[in-house]
Image (tube, rainbow, N blue to C red; front, side, top):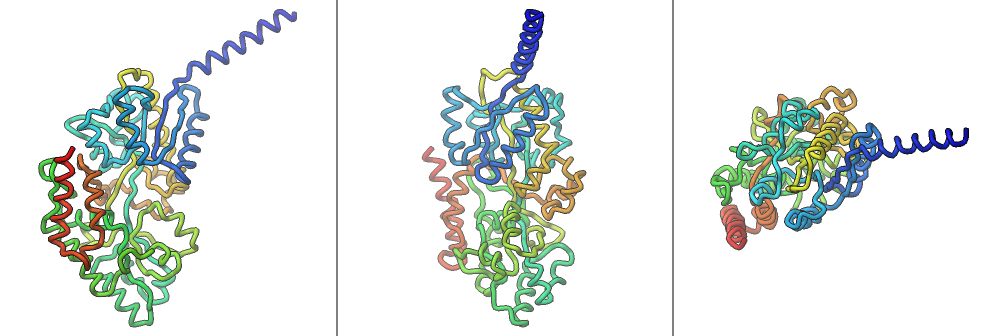
Length: 408
């Protein structure tokens, strides 16, 4: 009897061990740390608990760390993650340097990952030379917050009844509030790169280059966008440069605030009764919000098996279909279109960004030298409103990028 019982117990343990061994393990690197890192880890844990076919090992790190670490990792072929999250703007450079594998669309479709399930603007930006390299987790845009209590107090709601604010309306609401006794700030000089690229996209194609290599932003569209902000600054409608505009909005000292959807939680914590609408625009019929997207990619690794690729696809598909947590706790807008069927999401202020009929409002940029562009563009910052001419600013930006390209 004892021998029989021992045999049965051994068999149960063996079967349990075999079951555990059957799970395909995949290594996942992400650029999420802090609160969003904790949210991502909770989602990974939920995925692992939801099934026994795939087990994901999540390694979060800062974006700078990942972008510095991954080239050597790929070059040496050691400890290459099976899947990683990167910013969509980085994908063209990774492709050019042959650091990424494209997705086998037939293979990932077996796990449910299909183009029609995703935000079209985000999906299209990682189509390069007939191959597809990224699967979007989210879209995150620079939008417009406004203080509802202050809009009520100074009778400004007429300006946001249509869900949009134009540059002319920024001036008009500012004048009206000031006439009624408002002595705070009207609009902000915020994150220059995000603000300006949204405005720039409204005036032409969302492109930073014409030949795919050299920058091409010294043009009439960018000059007009910069002049718009210079005029607002000179008219006293914006905060001064390098102001802590976030604290001003949290403290009820700013009427209209340009910021990312990812700051929603901070606004809620500050106790502000706020509204969220698209980026300030020239024409309500041509709205554009600067937008980025976190994308799942697979870095080159000749040792990765098809079984692991399929496991990655199962994980990515689950993350898309269960992304309400990402919206609720990380303040993001999921790119998987199933989010539009989730009742809790429909009441979230960022939900308009997920509307498939408004996908063309998302200005997502793709440029091989995005990192160089970002550095040069950000270095100028808001200096063009008072310290340097717009023409000189654009010449400086393009020259710095071209010099950096030539030095590579």
